[in-house]
Length: 356
Image (cartoon, rainbow, N blue to C red; front, side, top):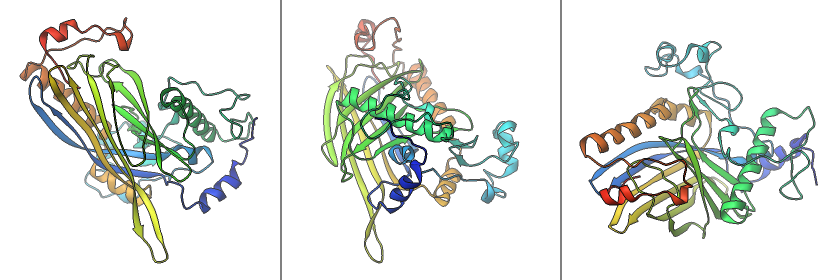
């Protein structure tokens, strides 16, 4: 059954505006940490930010805010003179927005950056009886792209968690930063109709080789733990024969208002303990808290950390250099001729090297 999205959208927008249980678009900030225990100790903690995009709401016609540069003219980091020094002139030619889902910006949400392994459905197909993409020419291209992203995400959940969420699907995403997309991992959360967490999908990238892999799980409410064998080579300092132990906490923050208690955002903690036959090797994770994605929230966050993608990439390679050149942790190459789940790591096992 094909449903025209032509106005999704007046009706959907109205329904979203009236739905007090829907999860808002939000910005989540906190920290990411790595604590290596073997074969050499190496620990670090960095600030981190995810854009919490309600992909279900986007597909129904709800938009993300557009945030311009108006309040940054005199800012020592994001003032016009400093932006000219650190950003391409083409991005600044017509006044660079701070955040946008429609045009080039300091931070830009591009739905085509995510879940590229999964193909969007054709105009005549649908994931269920209630939704598909219409071919009507006057449908906004951004809306089509958002609906395609939702379809890819539903496919990914079905493939890797054996079902699709019944409620909202929210992406914890890294957006393009000054034109550059880079994300070690994106997380996607699925909820039931009461907005209880039910699904988790991790979209993992192995930075040196630019490959992507997906882990999907069912959640048991706000707190879940699960274990599985590692089947994707992420770090050149970790072998494949390891065990992942996940601890996932997803809660909604609440704020008392004059007439009722309202939900304002998510608190998310995702920790992964990595071990093998020698014991615990690495502990890593994120802990972030969200606030509704307003212009004020976006501006304040970008004042603190305007170029997170670039600094994250620099930190990853800086830590890799430290492990390899200073701490002498052996390098384990990635053999692209082998399936991810069948990589041979005899050399790594002989050397006893590990890290993620």
